[in-house]
Image (tube, rainbow, N blue to C red; front, top):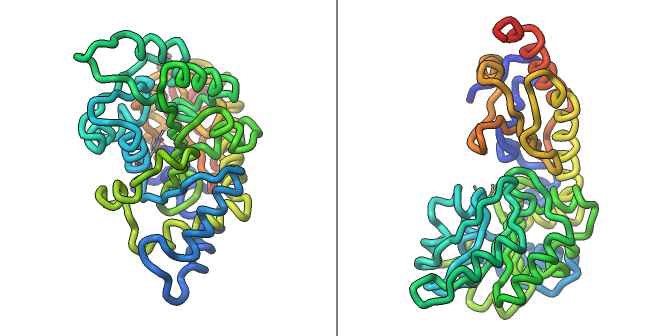
Length: 357
Ligand SMILES: *Cc1c(COP(=O)(O)O)cnc(C)c1O
């Protein structure tokens, strides 16, 4: 992998929050689980404890499942809510639409995603109503589920009121509400709210809670707040190749994250680092923030020569969302490395490329 050349941060990149390693709390829990025999396929004490930890965290008696990644979590959860002739309403930038290679359609045997244009990645009650009521004839896939990403792919956080307004429309129109919470912890940290406030209490039926971007090696949890919706979900996981035989190593890290509070600390740290970068670079000439910084991402609009110069200094970043450079901060971000990136940007803008302007 290319490393950036600016000492002392040769080993740190902000291209994605899944560039980070495993946080100490998750690793310690895996280590602890790594002794002796345990029952396979999830009927072990670690997996039961992890599910209980989630029920305590949410103050809800839901059904909890552990799978390997977010694509599987989202796709299988959506498939469980749909028949093949149903449709799923999502924002145009939703991960399920842009980054899952058709897995939601594949695992649901053809449920169609209905995409609402959304500049900031957020769905609105109006957009949902428009799509859900656009057609009611038999030739059109019947709307059945709404999925929202919290925070969105552009780092925008739905407020409690926004989620409640969405769930009100869903209930009125007979739609289930799914949340892609790949960075759910970051939303809790940003809003300083309890997990329940932006999930079941706000009308979410099924939540995919991301572990990978919260400091785990691998793994996402799927939480059904309405247990009836989880019927036979275990078969779905198995058929999709998502039932880990040594399940304790997918579940134990959650115990470490939740019981230590690291799930929230890690997310708050990522959010604070995004804010730290934004404050240092947003006012540089020619640069601007494409989206408000609300969670752990910064989207920078900058001239191509500035981005080229940044790459030449070894920094990696993606520009697949609207052409702006995305920087994402994980549990392991060192503040001095955020500052190094900011200093490189400042130097490039004020000294290196200023002559080109
Ligand atoms: C990272 C991410 C996922 C999960 O992606 P996988 O690579 O399948 O684990 C899901 N939704 C969003 C919004 C993400 O950013």
